[in-house]
Length: 102
Length: 473
Picture (cartoon, each protein chain N blue to C red):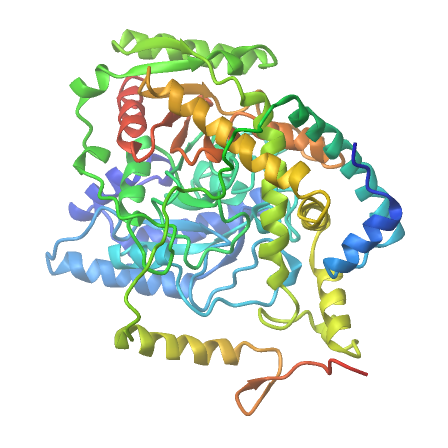
């Protein structure tokens, strides 16, 4: 049975780019234990020959012609302008972010 | 004077056409009522009076010129705050989007705008639609209009409460595992979750993409049919939306045909654990439907008990992927974080740690876990197979019956605060709405607290029975 240790929780949080306080860690460990215990019931089911359902629909390969739709393009240009306007910080039309390396 | 309590979409439309009142008058009445009533309900997160009045005047002008209007023209609606309306906030109930303003209209909004609907404001929800009580909102807790000490259900609790308290004529919500149907049942109104793929999700903030659907919350089944008819349809911007045409029977059911349908009662849903009230209501509903000539048959959905585990593996997995886009850069920043970080990684970590609430963090961590190498097969892959089995149960049952009837939830609305510390007990509120959702089926919640599940693309069956039922109660 899978148990998430304090150390593996730290690793998961790091992967998810979330910092947990000591209190939060304690609560999450307790909650996850309960939830994972509940999941144990799935082991009762033999699913060796079952195909997975990988999405909400059986639709496949939704393609369209690779053509420029000019009506759509001008709408998208408008949206693009509004997206840039909503950036936290802009320089010459580019999104400005804090530096990546120290 | 027209009383807001008496209005449905249908009779509002008649009133407009007969010039008994104007769209502007009614819209003003709604805002006046919201200003006083919502102080105790807390259904709305933001209001947009200016656009609403402008839209109302446009409709009144059409009527003055004797131009034809549509059923939804001038209808004042409330919109769940995870659906984008251009220029309006769309917080998804999260602090991480507190300062975000939508830059375009969701497709459902575009369709409603084209039909002339009026948007009163955006409604409260559990953060990113994760929850069954609307207590997970970062901003406020919505109260149940039927009993202010109780939850309205969730996650579309603000939308359900707004309609139930007569602060909107109809509302849009989203349903991933029960988020339209449960609050509809708890607030004693109608909520329709359409077939997966029937309504575009373009411009709807994603939670679990293999399950999320948009649908109406209304006072009557007939109203739900009208809203659904307006928002359904293929959308090239949402590859999961299907090209399906629905006929006139959605809103004009053929009662003789409806009478010949057979309704299945799945034994697993009645195996005990129902509260006394729920059981009493279900029995009286079945008796009424029988008196209309509908036939009932016992069916079995043997994998029902595994649906909850299956759902709570698949959903967090998809949540951890969908919520990775919130980084403090692309969808507005949290000012106190932005001004205090040294580098990009710190910006990501601080934004997400401050911006996400407890349930979001729990699901992101759980999702990261079930997708991690070493556990992927045991959890995520297993859950997808179990999902197939749950779907197959319904496929088999629908060989014998046309529609399935169940309670929406094992109990009525619980007290505010009663389940906040125990996520597992909160998850259990959705055990009757989750299985049909995993199978992508349409389902409707109708007072008093029963659910009709239809075959794929057979909304007309469940809406038809619902409209039939409505006529006799």
